[in-house]
Amino acid sequence: MRAFITGAAGFVGANVARALLTDGHHVRALVRASTDRRNLEGLPVELVEGDLDSPERLSDQITGCDVVFHVAARYSLWARDRAAIYRDNVDGTRNLLAAAQTARVSRFIHTSSVAAIGVPLSGTCATEKTQTSLEALVGDYKKSKYLAEQAALEAARAGLDVVIVNPSTPIGSYDIKPTPTGEIILRFLQGRMPFYVHTGLNLVDVCDVAAGHILAWRKGRTGERYILGHRNLSLKDMLEMLAALTGRRAPRWAVPHVLPLATAYMDEMVLARLFGKQPQLSYYSVQMSRKAMYYDAAKAVHELGLPQSPIEGALQRAVEWFSS
Image (cartoon, rainbow, N blue to C red):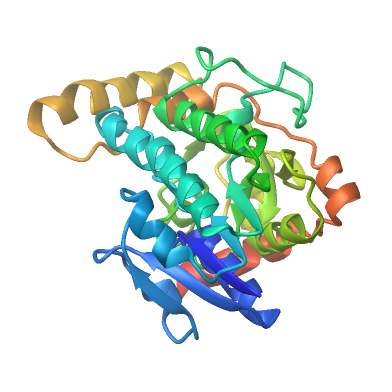
């Protein structure tokens, strides 16, 4: 099978590319000229330079491939990145869907996010049937992922064989940027996390997320979405797991959300705008942490056979990768 993949140099994409290669498939990866390609070093991947701006050129680059894995996305919680977020995540997805249709690929796997689903009601776990309204989603990243998912569903209704996967919070190797959760692990390892806030996450081994993409290609139902997740944990529980794995002390004290919220507002909305400096804390990220983001991956487990590997192993690999 010949697979075309976007975002292969990123965290999830690098793991998807490796899983495809391990299964013996040919991988053609779209990369920008400016892309950091360290995650692809030494891999037998066919690289094609380009971006998501031109459906015509994309269709030529996709031609000959059997399936598209659209993993690329601009992840940012900074308010100043608003225009680029919508351009890359929404317009770019529409362009790639159109190109895939022109190239007559047999299946399109769209990597969405639980961010597009939204936050469940207090005390519940969200499923694929949960949907927070666009207006109620916090931040432009979540809104863009929702709109991109809607574009994928529209393409499915128009005849393209599209399956959607919604990863929760992946943990593991190749978290190159890093992601916000990877940043938490890195801060913990560097002793820069004296406090924590009360929040919750659904953690999943990034290798299981990669496997979920391939399973969605093989078994997923057209027009359906599948949560690729595993274990719901509080941030406190996650930090205690890290403490047990590393021998470092977990932070003992929680701070009320109002303190980091005020700090983030001053940092991003005031100081960053006045002086043009990179903010250290995102206002939207603190807003999102006010509610536990718990999800139920039962549909993907039952229909796709999504693996449910122990989170401790994923955390251990993340620690080793960040420490290397």
